[in-house]
Amino acid sequence: MEKGLLLVVSGPSGAGKGTICKRLLSENKNIKLSISATTRSPRAGEVDGVNYFFLDKKDFEEKIKKNEFLEYAEVYGNYYGTPKQYVLEQLNSGKDVLLEIDIQGALNIKEIYPDGVFVFILPPSMEELKSRIVKRGTETKESLTRRFESAYEEIKFAFKYDYAVVNDEVDLAVNKIQSIISAEKYRVHRQKDTIDGI
Image (cartoon, rainbow, N blue to C red):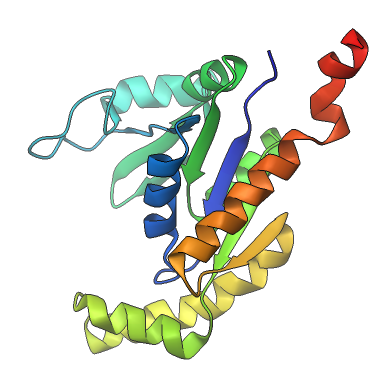
């Protein structure tokens, strides 16, 4: 059985990576979403092992010491991380694993797991990015400016990824990523067992 692909998706806020990832998961049944671990309390309706793996701080720090995360970060006093075992089990069973993550986390994973496929989602233009963030209606003028400035900085990191996909239309962007997945599966190093068998 061929190993699954680890698909890592990042991009600035407003680029539409969440929408693209949801669509990929609904259209491609071989893709599993990576489940993060966190020390924050479950919100109403959240289920352990489905939305997150909920851990207490002591357990999380123990797992850090044992190198059990592909990456982790502390955000507003809570830890968030990508459990290595869950991801590797899915990949070894032939499932592709989708990880929607920030740039810092993605670059950490690239060092540990360079065989992953790293995709950066770009907006069609900065004007469109600004328009999308404004339409959400969740930002103050200050936070909008901050998000916009950080988007300029984040886009510079696109060159550290394998692929850049412009999200002008969601359907087109999803099709592009499906094409990337297909092409990556036929890379020679991923076909070793097939070639050896022949």
